[in-house]
Length: 365
Image (cartoon, rainbow, N blue to C red):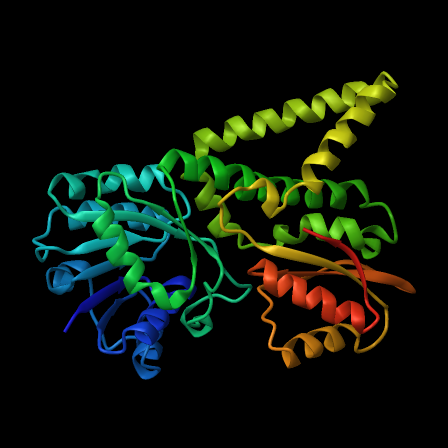
């Protein structure tokens, strides 16, 4: 019987456990977590088969080891694993949100001939902890793999173990990963939080203040609601890259500030025009073979049951939605509903279905 050890039974770790059990019901899963209540719940719900107190007690029994804690804990775990006697052929991976620091920590394992593969599933939820885990959490989500020196055969083994998660695999280097998530995830979180904080101060003397915040403001600051402890820790593990990216962003703001002060309309026009062209072309046709999502932007009336009607029609046609997002909410004005699908065929079928039902497609990507 194959034994899989998962250290860290939060949202990601428990969801991976459920996904593995769904695809490979015969495996034995050992769970480690610092929270006794989480371990108890995981055992009771069949997420894991047995629990263990620490890595040293059970790492040598595992065929696959998944490290699913925060990045600083993952780094410490990798250093510890390098000192332990592990089973021949063991496969070690992690789910950390930054990869250069993790891959450096895993170097000692790889030098010993252990197959270590850095990983990062780009999925999450507004809920956290073991009780929020679900087998389909990662469906159609991007899952970064950073093999380093580990061979392709080991990568394929990991993909087989996680095949029931139905993710979209992307193999990258650690530097590529950290640059991408730094620019597309870490920097936007900083910008969103800064805008919310600055707006709170700027409108502190206004009786209405943030009560009027809606539409565009809420859309671009949504991610400012993320967990502050987690994000403070994430930025510490990608500090050099994110400070460089943040400085580039600051320089851009300064250029625009200067243009506004100088009433330089051509510069301002070019600024918005360039951004519009880039944003309007964030579609699959520009991404080559990269696995991507397909969006429909749908005008929906501001009335009770409008969104429910859209989702009901899609469900009856058995068209699966990857994600749904309300981009604009204003009284007495049509809202914009962003529907995301995993493939072009489903998007096309949905567009035809909703158009026939009288809905207006504002745009598709």
